[in-house]
Length: 198
Image (tube, rainbow, N blue to C red; front, top):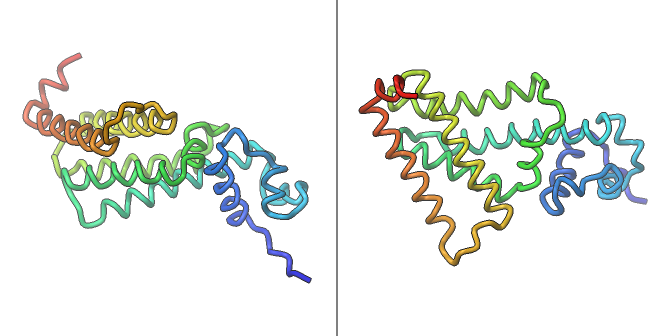
Protein backbone atom coordinates (compact mmCIF):
# COMPACT_ATOMS: atom_id res chain seq x y z
CA UNK A 1 0.00 0.00 0.00
CA UNK A 2 1.46 3.34 -1.04
CA UNK A 3 1.73 6.10 1.52
CA UNK A 4 -0.45 9.11 0.72
CA UNK A 5 1.53 12.30 0.14
CA UNK A 6 0.88 15.01 2.72
CA UNK A 7 -0.78 17.87 0.87
CA UNK A 8 0.21 21.49 1.50
CA UNK A 9 0.12 24.75 -0.46
CA UNK A 10 3.69 24.45 -1.72
CA UNK A 11 3.00 21.05 -3.27
CA UNK A 12 -0.23 22.33 -4.80
CA UNK A 13 1.56 25.31 -6.35
CA UNK A 14 4.40 23.12 -7.60
CA UNK A 15 1.99 20.82 -9.41
CA UNK A 16 -0.14 23.70 -10.67
CA UNK A 17 2.96 25.40 -12.03
CA UNK A 18 3.92 22.22 -13.88
CA UNK A 19 0.45 22.06 -15.43
CA UNK A 20 0.27 25.69 -16.55
CA UNK A 21 3.82 25.66 -17.91
CA UNK A 22 3.03 22.57 -19.98
CA UNK A 23 -0.55 23.28 -21.07
CA UNK A 24 -1.19 26.99 -20.48
CA UNK A 25 -2.99 28.95 -17.78
CA UNK A 26 -6.37 28.72 -19.50
CA UNK A 27 -6.25 24.92 -19.36
CA UNK A 28 -5.86 24.87 -15.58
CA UNK A 29 -8.80 23.44 -13.64
CA UNK A 30 -9.25 22.09 -10.14
CA UNK A 31 -10.13 18.75 -11.69
CA UNK A 32 -6.90 18.49 -13.69
CA UNK A 33 -4.87 19.60 -10.67
CA UNK A 34 -6.58 17.10 -8.38
CA UNK A 35 -5.87 14.36 -10.92
CA UNK A 36 -2.21 15.37 -11.03
CA UNK A 37 -2.07 15.26 -7.22
CA UNK A 38 -4.07 11.99 -7.11
CA UNK A 39 -6.65 13.45 -4.75
CA UNK A 40 -10.33 14.34 -4.90
CA UNK A 41 -11.03 17.96 -5.99
CA UNK A 42 -12.80 18.95 -2.73
CA UNK A 43 -9.53 18.35 -0.85
CA UNK A 44 -8.04 21.38 -2.59
CA UNK A 45 -10.47 23.70 -0.81
CA UNK A 46 -8.60 23.09 2.45
CA UNK A 47 -5.73 25.08 0.94
CA UNK A 48 -7.12 27.39 -1.76
CA UNK A 49 -10.25 29.43 -2.41
CA UNK A 50 -11.38 27.87 -5.67
CA UNK A 51 -9.83 28.30 -9.12
CA UNK A 52 -9.49 32.08 -8.82
CA UNK A 53 -7.83 31.64 -5.46
CA UNK A 54 -5.39 29.17 -7.01
CA UNK A 55 -4.56 31.57 -9.84
CA UNK A 56 -4.01 34.33 -7.30
CA UNK A 57 -1.57 32.13 -5.37
CA UNK A 58 0.18 31.27 -8.63
CA UNK A 59 0.49 34.97 -9.47
CA UNK A 60 2.11 35.69 -6.11
CA UNK A 61 4.41 32.69 -6.35
CA UNK A 62 5.39 33.66 -9.89
CA UNK A 63 6.27 37.24 -8.97
CA UNK A 64 8.34 36.03 -6.01
CA UNK A 65 10.20 33.52 -8.16
CA UNK A 66 10.83 36.12 -10.89
CA UNK A 67 12.26 38.44 -8.25
CA UNK A 68 14.55 35.65 -7.04
CA UNK A 69 15.79 35.02 -10.59
CA UNK A 70 16.54 38.69 -11.12
CA UNK A 71 18.08 39.16 -7.68
CA UNK A 72 20.48 36.26 -8.18
CA UNK A 73 21.44 37.66 -11.57
CA UNK A 74 22.19 41.08 -10.05
CA UNK A 75 24.49 39.81 -7.31
CA UNK A 76 28.07 41.01 -7.81
CA UNK A 77 27.17 43.11 -10.86
CA UNK A 78 26.57 46.79 -11.43
CA UNK A 79 25.72 49.30 -14.13
CA UNK A 80 25.42 48.05 -17.71
CA UNK A 81 26.43 44.51 -16.75
CA UNK A 82 23.72 44.32 -14.09
CA UNK A 83 21.01 45.52 -16.49
CA UNK A 84 22.01 42.90 -19.05
CA UNK A 85 22.10 40.19 -16.42
CA UNK A 86 18.71 40.92 -14.80
CA UNK A 87 17.13 41.31 -18.25
CA UNK A 88 18.47 37.93 -19.36
CA UNK A 89 17.22 36.40 -16.09
CA UNK A 90 13.74 37.79 -16.80
CA UNK A 91 13.74 36.26 -20.28
CA UNK A 92 14.99 32.90 -19.00
CA UNK A 93 12.32 32.82 -16.30
CA UNK A 94 9.55 33.32 -18.84
CA UNK A 95 11.02 30.67 -21.14
CA UNK A 96 11.17 28.16 -18.27
CA UNK A 97 7.83 29.12 -16.71
CA UNK A 98 5.58 30.51 -19.48
CA UNK A 99 2.34 29.55 -17.74
CA UNK A 100 3.44 30.78 -14.34
CA UNK A 101 4.55 34.08 -15.86
CA UNK A 102 1.19 34.37 -17.60
CA UNK A 103 -0.44 34.05 -14.18
CA UNK A 104 1.57 37.03 -12.91
CA UNK A 105 0.07 39.24 -15.60
CA UNK A 106 -3.53 37.99 -15.37
CA UNK A 107 -4.22 37.60 -11.65
CA UNK A 108 -7.85 38.08 -10.57
CA UNK A 109 -7.34 40.39 -7.57
CA UNK A 110 -5.18 43.44 -8.21
CA UNK A 111 -5.79 44.68 -4.64
CA UNK A 112 -3.87 41.79 -3.07
CA UNK A 113 -1.45 43.56 -0.68
CA UNK A 114 1.02 40.68 -0.60
CA UNK A 115 1.13 40.62 -4.39
CA UNK A 116 1.62 44.38 -4.52
CA UNK A 117 4.56 44.06 -2.12
CA UNK A 118 6.12 41.31 -4.25
CA UNK A 119 5.76 43.45 -7.38
CA UNK A 120 7.27 46.41 -5.54
CA UNK A 121 10.29 44.26 -4.65
CA UNK A 122 11.05 43.87 -8.36
CA UNK A 123 10.67 47.61 -8.93
CA UNK A 124 13.04 48.31 -6.03
CA UNK A 125 15.55 45.79 -7.36
CA UNK A 126 15.67 47.51 -10.75
CA UNK A 127 15.87 50.93 -9.07
CA UNK A 128 18.81 49.65 -7.07
CA UNK A 129 20.53 48.49 -10.25
CA UNK A 130 19.93 51.95 -11.77
CA UNK A 131 21.59 53.68 -8.82
CA UNK A 132 24.92 53.20 -10.60
CA UNK A 133 23.84 55.92 -13.07
CA UNK A 134 22.94 58.51 -10.39
CA UNK A 135 19.64 59.28 -12.07
CA UNK A 136 17.07 61.55 -10.49
CA UNK A 137 14.23 59.57 -8.94
CA UNK A 138 11.63 60.55 -11.53
CA UNK A 139 13.86 59.60 -14.45
CA UNK A 140 14.81 56.33 -12.75
CA UNK A 141 11.13 55.37 -12.44
CA UNK A 142 10.59 56.17 -16.12
CA UNK A 143 13.53 53.86 -16.88
CA UNK A 144 12.00 51.07 -14.80
CA UNK A 145 8.78 51.41 -16.79
CA UNK A 146 10.74 51.38 -20.03
CA UNK A 147 12.68 48.24 -19.14
CA UNK A 148 9.54 46.48 -17.99
CA UNK A 149 7.84 47.34 -21.27
CA UNK A 150 10.78 45.95 -23.23
CA UNK A 151 10.98 42.72 -21.24
CA UNK A 152 7.26 42.04 -21.09
CA UNK A 153 6.74 42.99 -24.73
CA UNK A 154 9.60 40.85 -25.99
CA UNK A 155 8.63 37.79 -23.95
CA UNK A 156 4.95 38.13 -24.87
CA UNK A 157 5.72 38.23 -28.60
CA UNK A 158 8.13 35.32 -28.26
CA UNK A 159 5.59 33.19 -26.36
CA UNK A 160 3.01 33.84 -29.08
CA UNK A 161 5.49 32.70 -31.73
CA UNK A 162 5.57 36.18 -33.19
CA UNK A 163 9.24 36.21 -34.17
CA UNK A 164 8.91 34.22 -37.36
CA UNK A 165 11.86 35.54 -39.37
CA UNK A 166 14.94 33.25 -39.56
CA UNK A 167 17.11 35.42 -37.31
CA UNK A 168 18.60 34.66 -33.90
CA UNK A 169 16.07 35.81 -31.27
CA UNK A 170 18.77 36.08 -28.60
CA UNK A 171 20.76 38.41 -30.84
CA UNK A 172 17.68 40.58 -31.31
CA UNK A 173 17.23 40.71 -27.55
CA UNK A 174 20.88 41.59 -26.97
CA UNK A 175 20.66 44.47 -29.46
CA UNK A 176 17.44 45.68 -27.83
CA UNK A 177 18.93 45.73 -24.32
CA UNK A 178 22.16 47.36 -25.52
CA UNK A 179 20.08 50.05 -27.21
CA UNK A 180 18.20 50.62 -23.94
CA UNK A 181 21.51 50.91 -22.08
CA UNK A 182 22.82 53.41 -24.62
CA UNK A 183 19.62 55.35 -24.04
CA UNK A 184 20.32 55.47 -20.30
CA UNK A 185 23.75 56.99 -20.95
CA UNK A 186 22.17 59.56 -23.25
CA UNK A 187 19.64 60.46 -20.55
CA UNK A 188 22.41 60.75 -17.94
CA UNK A 189 24.14 63.42 -19.99
CA UNK A 190 20.91 65.31 -20.77
CA UNK A 191 18.76 64.57 -17.73
CA UNK A 192 17.30 68.04 -17.22
CA UNK A 193 16.15 68.19 -20.85
CA UNK A 194 14.29 64.89 -20.45
CA UNK A 195 12.61 66.08 -17.27
CA UNK A 196 11.47 69.30 -18.91
CA UNK A 197 10.30 67.70 -22.14
CA UNK A 198 6.77 66.45 -22.72
